[in-house]
Length: 355
Image 1 (cartoon, rainbow, N blue to C red):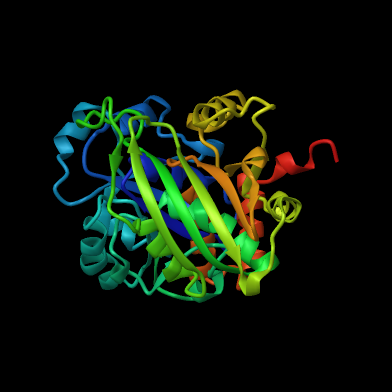
Image 2: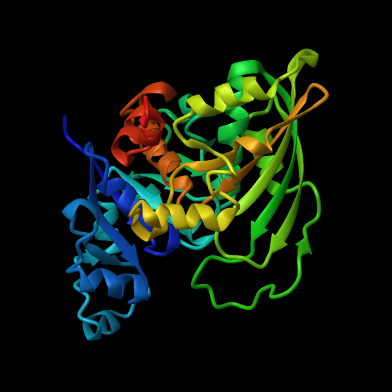
């Protein structure tokens, strides 16, 4: 079976990780990446002779408006134009800034008949399906254009879908403690304050779009940190059913993309996960799984409450690999598609320790 040929538009915070994700999929081929300027990310890649994960060469293509002379001055080799890349792939992963992806669709993807997957910065109208690998995989099968949920929504839905499939969920109320910027961002931001957003949060609205049978609302607080978000969730089961802590734990511990931890183990907050990922030797300190504190799970009447940690730079990568599999019909069911993604990304291996 021939490999699915994949291109990545934008080699920034998400684009780098998308390229790495594709390079780890043994049934996919990373044809190339595309960008506008010789950024630090591309300069670092050049120092590694354009070699990324698993010894894969990351061929660079230039988007319209790129300054070729700047790339020559930085001694960064260029393989061709963005049009060249689009004509040599089966599917594009678009991680360009919000709004640019829609223009790429109009000017390139539709023109050359190439499928595309957009990240959370684009409007939902850009895609045929608003996609999540676990919650609605089958809706994306064979579609030309899929859009991923945001980092917070991706991790949130993993847990709500997990409980919903096990016990049935009627509604959720969430509070998001959101990091204000990514590491390395230099734009002005909060320095000594917390900032509220109007309710409901877009994450709650997006959850209802993906899972229309679940009612959701939420509050978001911007926080002056750069590593990870924390979300608290209050979930209510259908038909007045009670979900106990033991029932919730049983479901969460079975999910490959949920890492159940405790504070006694040393996972005291968002920084603990980032340090742990670095200690694991994970590239860029990334973690594909979300963290869920077992000691945050509490019963409130028939409701169940818990808290999760979202590694914002890498959490959407597995679901994007799922989206490739769905759109190109590599696997037709969520069980098969997510299993292949998990296998190649090494997700869930920690669950076998001591067993």
